[in-house]
Each structure stands twice: as structure tokens, then as C-alpha cells.
Image 1 (cartoon, rainbow, N blue to C red):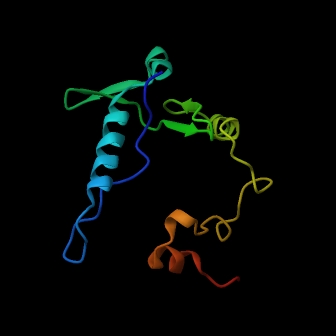
Image 2: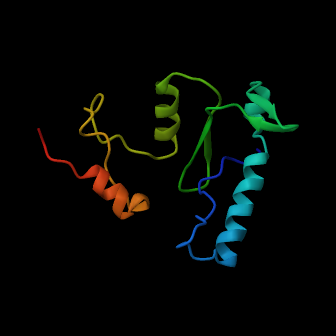
Image 3: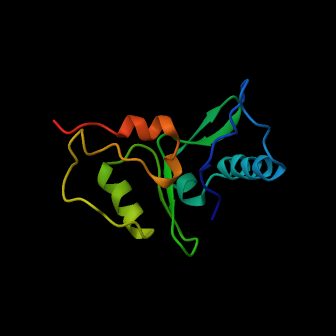
Amino acid sequence: MGGGLPVSAPPARGADARPASEATTAAFAAHVEEARDIPDEARAAGKLSQTEGRERLSFPSAIFIGKSGERHGVWGFQPAEAYREAALAAGATQTNRGPLTPLDAPQPTPSSGTTPSKAACARPEP
């Protein structure tokens, strides 16, 4: 099976940004290469397009990776249930029953631990 989608972004660049470590740069390059490797299942489903002369996965597409490395993909526009099923198949657990209210949806996660994202999620109850 081919690779998946990148799961990280390049390091920020700006006046106050620190230079990326060699490990960060190498990890980002590996994610970029993986994103260019169209999974066989997506190719078989015809869910790819061309951008600037390169093949790309159709947007939106997602690959959920389980703890053992198994991949569960959803290619192109699909019902939300297809994404939910793929996430559950990869080991995700559902924490709510039904849709969230707008005030319940944005919650900080360990990977979104920046001060601005935590501030955006901290809101008073109505």
C-alpha cells in the first residue's frame, strides 16, 4: 500500500521563530514524500487529481493510522460517517453521543497546546 498524508506542518518562519532542527526538517521532508505516494486504494477508486503536473490525492482525503500502523483511508468527498468509521477502525473512541454544540466543539488537545489555541477554547458558559 502507498503512503499517507502529512501529519505535520513545516516549522514557522518569522522574526521570532527558531531555526528548525535537522530532525524536524528530515521528518517534514519524509511527510512530504509520503504525501506524494498515492495509496493504491485511492488510485483504484480514481480519487486523485493533478496539480502543477504532479499527482495528488483528491481533497478531502484522510488516512487514520492505528497503533499497529494499519491504515484506514477515506478518499475524496464522502459522508461524515465514512470518516467516523475509518477513525473507529483505526482505534479512535467516540466520546460523545450525537453532534456537539458549538460551545462544546473546540477543545484544546495536547498537540494544540499553544497559548492562543488554549485561549480560543477557554470561554464562559452562557
